[in-house]
Image (cartoon, rainbow, N blue to C red; front, side, top):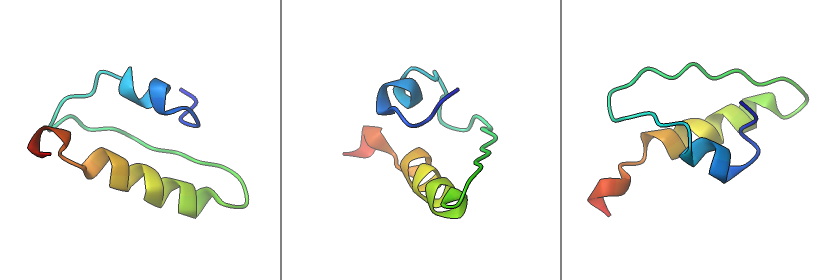
Length: 47
């Protein structure tokens, strides 16, 4: 899936505790992965 769209991430359907494998390519891949991990680790139900 193309994670450049927040709507794509939201429609992923991953539930709390699910394992998600992330992969990125390109010059800013590390920064992109860090941002995605931060989003996925956020407990949106707690806010």
